[in-house]
Structures are given as structure tokens and as C-alpha cells.
Amino acid sequence: MIRGSRGSSLKGFLDAGLPRRTLLTSVLFHSFMMCSSSPVSARSKISEAEQILKNVEWPEQFPFKKEDFQRFDESPDTIFYSSPRFVTHIDDYAIQALTKYYASIFPPSNTPGVALLDMCSSWISHYPKGYRQERIAGLGLNDEELKRNQVLTEYAVQDLNKNPLLPYEDNSFDVITNAVSVDYLTKPLEVFREMRRVLKPGGIAVMSFSNRCFWTKAISIWTGTGDVDHVYIVGSYFHYAGGYEPPQALDISPNPGRSDPMYVVFSRKRKAESS
Image (cartoon, rainbow, N blue to C red; front, side, top):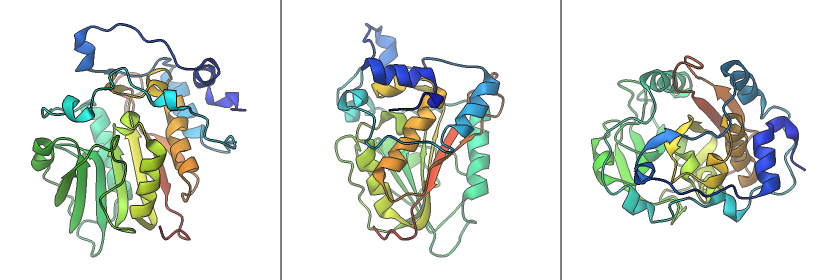
């Protein structure tokens, strides 16, 4: 039984099954828009988002169904992302908040042996200005965007919804980031198991997201639920993938109610895990 402390919207979604499908105008297929079905007050979002993963009682089995990971637009992602988009998908305040958070957890620049992976990467990673390591890998869907990303030392183009196997050796990275893209993963457990595999023991994986998305490409469980539920959903990926420490959440929204919200769910690979 999924506990109601997570909020009524996700519980209702799971009880009722797949939410409605509605006809959309063509603009929805290419517009970045709000992606929360049940907004709540800024004060309660901050409190709930940071508390939701504390002392959580996870169901014995992964609580989501295959249908929960369907999208309105099931065409290949390589088609949707074939044209580069040199834009940012969250406002400047949210970007600054994410960059500040990264600065607080990243190893210092030019630390020998340190490697980072930016998953679902694009032309910008929102890393601190001037941040450098010998290896910063990017994995994304558009070659032109990845070429433009100045923080990356290497990149690869791969559709994780077709092939969730990461093209990296075991125990390769100290940090994995994914900014505002976890909501598009249709095989999240496979991806999170791969993240665990390529993380070094004790390495950290950081998933950040707001309330905006390409609605037609986001999974249905995401578009049918609210911000606090999204924290629980991402936390569940870490939990059920196995091999991670208990996931934690932060609400780093810079101006609640006045700018884009920003949430972080993170976890570390257990040091006892070697793959």
C-alpha cells in the first residue's frame, strides 16, 4: 500500500490508473510548458518536497506500471530532438540556483582522477563558470548541441529510451548529473542501474527538475502528478534500482511562487557496491 503522506494526487493516479488523453494543438508537441497537474502553495512545496523521502516506507514492489511510462508522443526521440535547440528550459533564477548547488557538491576543478558525466546533456550543463576536470563526458540526443557545450571533454549521442546501456566502463565517474530530463526516461530502472554501474563507489548521482517539460514527451505518471510527487517518483528510481544509499531531496527554488521551482533528488552509490 502506498502511503498517503506523499500527497493525494499520486495516490489517486496509482489507484485510478493511466490518466486521460486529450487532443492537443500542434504547438504542444514543440513547446516547453508547465508539467505539474496539482500545484500547491510555495511554502508547502518547500516543506513537502524536502520531507517526502525522509522515513519513507517503500512498497515491496516497484509501484508503477508499464503504462505509466507511456508518452503522448511515442515517435522516436531522435526525430523530436533532431533539430538543435539553443535555448534554456528553466528561467535564469532557477539556473543560478542549480549552478550554486553544483558548486557546493562538485569536487574542486582540476582534481586529478575526477570524472563527471552529464546525462541527457545539451549545449549547456549549468556547471559553475570555469569548472574543469580532465574528464567531463556528455550523453545526449543532438550532436550539434553537444558540440557547443564548452564544459564537455567528450560526448556521445544515444537515445536512452531505446538503449539504456551506458557506453562507459564500470566505476568510471565521481558525479553524474541530469538536469530537467529525468521526466523523459521510459526505462528509468534500467538507466539508474547503469548509472550505479558506472559510478565509482561513493559517487553521487544528482537528478534536478522543475515544473516545466515538453509535455508530449514526458512520461504519463509525470504529467498526471505534481511537484512533490515527482520527488517521490525520482526517489523510487534510486530505491528500486538497488545499490544506492537512501535518496534525499532538496528544494532549491530561488524565489518560490515568483520564478521556476527547482528540485534536486540525489543519492550515492553504496561503497560496498563495485558494479
